[in-house]
Image (tube, rainbow, N blue to C red; front, top):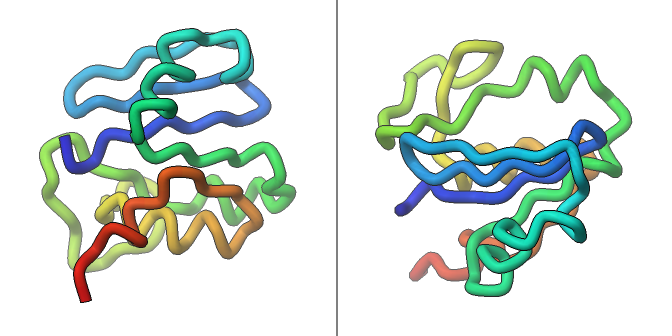
Length: 105
């Protein structure tokens, strides 16, 4: 799925797979399904280093169906996974299995 990703924050780990989200309060190291997804190449966004929680809370979401909004900032808006990664990385997140490096130029 093009927007599938794993995200880990202070509240736990989430696997976003299209219409399904699986989560746990444990960090990724104690969530075998998430660790397996990352090991198989699913993009992993580690937001634990992000300290600006207000800016993070105002980030748009990654849509489940691939649709995006033309006004791509603020809560409730949606952007592509790669655009989201660009935004959250600027806030200090660490990215593994970065899908931006797989894009053809």
